[in-house]
Length: 145
Ligand code: CA2
Image (cartoon, rainbow, N blue to C red; front, top):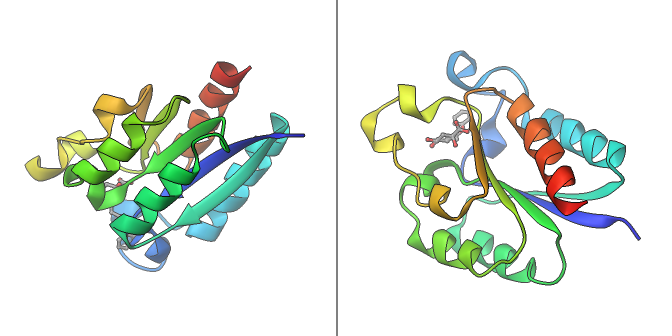
């Protein structure tokens, strides 16, 4: 059976490709999902791709990953900068976690420079657009192997 990778997306990422293309690009979240599914498949991994606008739902999904996922890719979106709850849920996982941001959060407003998730992530990719997700999957595939 294929090992499962959980790919989580936080609030407002459902709007990707429909607003602010100058900041976030033209790809939709559905486009990103196809990229991720294809890349997981190339590594023989199963892709479980999800998005939620709700912090508690993301926490529930992270908790459910215990024993069911071999790795996690997460773009926590705005919760990166605010959520101790997501930080705490992630730190209870004993599988590799890669944090992804489409934009380079360090070139943006100061409130985006700190992420509560980075301290519990094995690696962080930011500023590379949707390619950040596929690079994160490549890294996970190596760690999981
Ligand atoms: O660069 C990223 O991937 C972010 O995680 C995106 C978040 C932002 O709060 C983080 O600081 C950096 C925002 C996601 C909202 O996405 C939108 C997409 C289209 C239109 C409006 C928002």
